Length: 372
Image 1: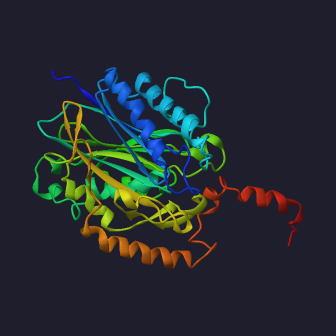
Image 2: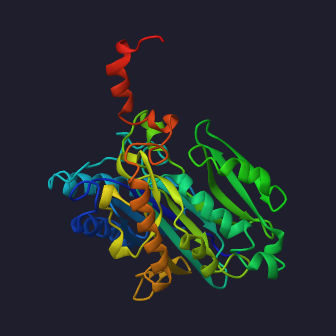
Image 3: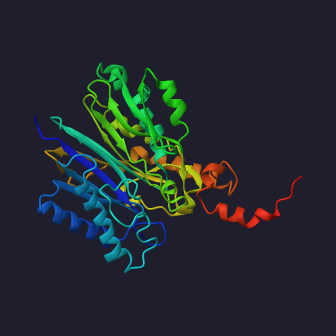
């Protein structure tokens, strides 16, 4: 039996240039140095360092399995060292923002950084795509994942591939209660939709193939405000999706993002805005700290090594004119929804606003309310 490969995608906001805008090149440079050292010491097989807006992303391959203390500590120490050696000396904005717990306790989950991991047995050809978003929350993946794995109008394979016709099972997490349920589509499609339409509470964490039970997709589900009890920056989720053969094709995985659906986040994490698919070079939020962005990077896995277009540089999948119309539509939606200012539905509902600075305003006014 072949040794299984673990793909770990871990991100954190540890400081950025010009507000919540973009990471500094020296942050990327130091992170690469630290992971290259770990590779030479044979602690990991391969790595790729990138950013989406103000989030530093680490893609790591190993044979350590999911939730490996060694891999999680490597990521944690990388974020900490970049914070101490680059972010703080340069006085970058919100230095170490996502490092919410001081002492590493064996697992990076629940400490602030977002984590998506899967352990797989490599197929003869193993293409996969990593997605990273900025200025939004984990529920932003719900609609695209539903379309990838349950909507035959998006994924032709669900109709014409007998193995895909068996469908997929979605693991849905209630991020408020910390519990999950597995729902199989198409058999339980309506129950699935009943949950995942409430994106702030019910979040898709994993997707499994009903054909062979293998994992196909995994997402980070960290809600920073639930860890800290107040707004400390948006969650900025990441996701890994395997493609082709008995899974959706790369084109079917990308297609949902041609529709710039509304997601929670934007400025101060308190507003709705369209999810804008962009290339790596355009993954930097500006207008109203947005619009929320998403990147898609494609790789081949070869005995754990990351194969890209030039060395291990990935295919920058949204750097394509095919998504120009989606970008134009997203900018039009942005202008329209921002025209509402601080009125719903542009602003989030009261449950989500509880974790912003709004409670401070309510506290200030608490003795001035008069019964009618």
